[in-house]
Length: 201
Image (cartoon, rainbow, N blue to C red; front, top):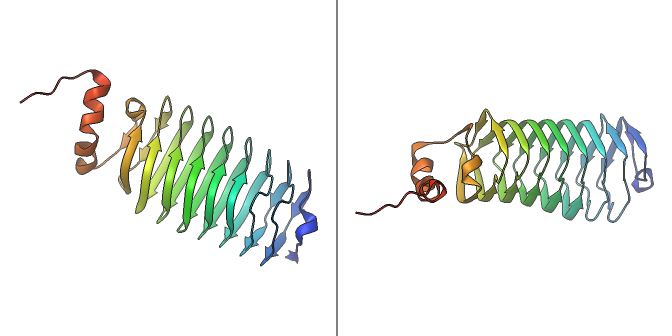
């Protein structure tokens, strides 16, 4: 695997088999670039423009960014380990077989995206925005999740049992998700409000 540098990140770049390690990539423009079989490790990606980027068979380890704009992007067979990102805005994207392990993401924006096989494991999440998304086989394992927005999402075979949920919006779209009994009790007031139940003793 060849070593990449900051100047490899440019619009429409074809990045095949490169390793980016310990680099300050702040503010680079990688719009519509393709990362194929790459490794990105211990890099600062703050404000790297990733509109329309394709990330394929690639690993990210220990990367950090305050904001990482990646709308209309494609992520397939990707592992993100120990990343620390303020806002990953990937609305309108396609995520297929993505595994996020550890780390912290304050805002993961997957609005209007197509998600198939996303596994979140040991991640601290501020907001997970799945509004208007099509989500199939989402698995959450041992994650703190402050806010989940599932407004008008379509969920199929989604396992939320490993999420410590605090706030849920769009509770009416949670059909197709698997939760624990304790989670169901926490969701009961929201579900009652959604269907118009009047609960009185």
